[in-house]
Length: 248
Image 1 (cartoon, rainbow, N blue to C red):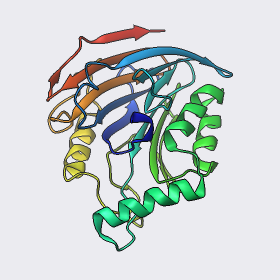
Image 2: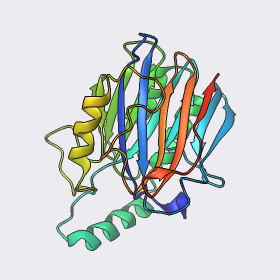
Image 3: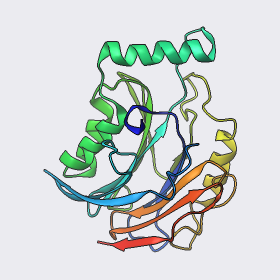
Image 4: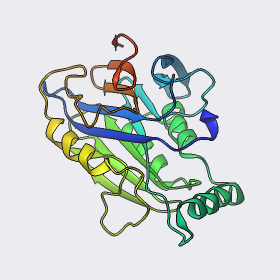
């Protein structure tokens, strides 16, 4: 079911790390499926471009959050739903039908390709901006130096790029783009993340309500320059795992 689902909300921010070493990515994933928080894993994977850490679940083949030490960290946010004038259910059905009809690459698999195949931040930006995809998505990518960070707002065949420092939730940053909002709290989460991006403390000290909410299942801090990855799972607004901290 996870491999067919694309219904989550997310909050992601990237900014220069407080100590000046690289760009730090701060990220939560909200998904109203009980058990995802307590069953999250970090898998060590290796592709053609080298090793990387995938924050994932057993059996899930795509990527929503990951870190490739020395290369980049990245995350996927759900974009607004394309409106077709058919109401919520009608728009959802038509959008899913178009995915199957057009055969575009699912965003979760494109992000996995970036970690498997891209040797540099610039290579990953090109892949995520130029590759046709099956439905709109929002990618965040943070490189290993202080100037490398972008949010890429993707339509099926077009891209809008926003440079770091930047944060994003589940509505477009580009004012000319339209669509049905995915969460009534999207703007509140964005405002809170903007105020927390410069938080000096490491780890998950930036995590506060409403970024943390009842549907939050995952919180991650990642830094490609230092190879540091901090992960914690959540259920019902409370920690469901201990904090995992890795330094590659």
